[in-house]
Length: 395
Ligand SMILES: Cc1ncc(COP(=O)(O)O)c(C=O)c1O
Image (cartoon, rainbow, N blue to C red; front, side, top):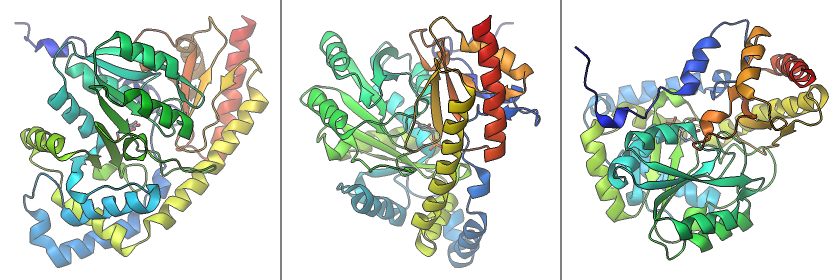
């Protein structure tokens, strides 16, 4: 008997990247495909010390059910850090701790999206958001990214011509492109969104991983006063295995998010929240982030230099000032899917760009991750990839 699945599952596919990662499990393949932080930088012994302290001092409480909103001292820490690092005012009571920022996307879908609602995303856009909002049968519209953020005239046009429920954007070192919104573009986005009946979701898991240049205020609270939701995560600055993220939103929205989260998982792991709080209290997160910046900054430098040496000149690459990804554009007409098959034979992998485009374009693009390979493997992998691209162009 065929199983009858819900209609909402009909258009949602397994994550394309997870499928690719299976191919790249072979250790002889140099993989720039995953979006993984470098595990050598996880603060394992500090987290261990924090975990032991939590167990010794508050064992039973940290094993108990807790509030949906999340551990108050952790929310206060996040609010204080926004003030200190970004210069924006956030109240601890506007923060909801979530099971990774990915859960925020699920909650946003539950709270805001009816089937067929228009959701605006960037082109290219974050695959995890596409998958999450697809479950709620969103209809996607896109706005193209330029080197310093979205094309503002396209943004205005798409908003004028369509009734859009939500605009989802990754404003720092975007996944997949590595691109960052300039202060001018942030201001422009806020001006265009102001006064419109639309939810703006700013997802910022990479903002603190800046290796060069200046920090920018988030659009939400920095430039846009109303209807803005800001997402954050400990995944890239501490460890993704804790599954700790958060959402900053006005009280009326947070009340609905709390209901949706209660229905999903009651609350985020009490233990994980207390351990991370202990970790950021007893150790310096700033010092730790500095180490990540230094390592990723060097790896990014090596990747950019290797690309300049080994890729043909007609291949275009973004030069991000932080984060974990570079974005490659091949000459028009070339398929990165075809290149992928060839690259795997040469024992090197990347993520073809097409899945990041809901409109079926982006065939000639691909994503490279630089956070999770050492410098020697980056040089060797880019050399192999460059040889593959040259072969392709020659044919
Ligand atoms: C833009 C973006 N948002 C959200 C996430 C999910 O992160 P988390 O581990 O906090 O769920 C990722 C992870 O790669 C991401 O790139």
